[in-house]
Length: 250
Image (cartoon, rainbow, N blue to C red; front, side, top):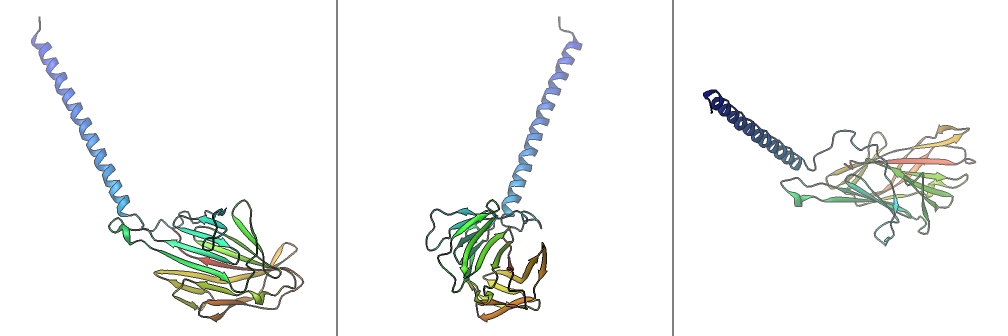
């Protein structure tokens, strides 16, 4: 026999079940709303600058390009939003601009080519330090070139052997709209909407494990060519010329 108390308890359980079901539906609806909001924000922010320091210290890793031809280098490295292509006597930096969610077809890339005028086209490249450095031997007589970098920098070090002539080095910058020498001795390049800075080189000789800086600076030779001006140094020792190309590769 079903008593009034039993009926009341059954109704009470039914109400609890309906309430729990409604709470679960509401919770799932709120979660879907949150997921949609996050997705929308991610799409809207596509191409926005990353937080300062994000990925900047990650080194570039160069891999042999087995399909190398006249336009693409012997080695390639891919960054977050850029690519570096290397071959004897030239590096091509391609900076890619991500499209916004509202205008996905508006993205473009800027290509800046850092070439060595009058260098040897037969210099062979090989990786060092794992795959983080690429070295080309004898790009000029007695001068090797080593590339390395990270997400915002490309360094190319000239290793000048004893008695070799660093005055032979001429850096030619193609794909730029303008070039100027600023008050700090840096080369400032404009390529489309991008500004790229070629920092004043750090030049040194190492003696007994200690680096001794040699006074240096850029010499502008033409609208897109620069050389290096050096203070007196010991020509019986190797000289290292270390310029750094700084860009926003995020």
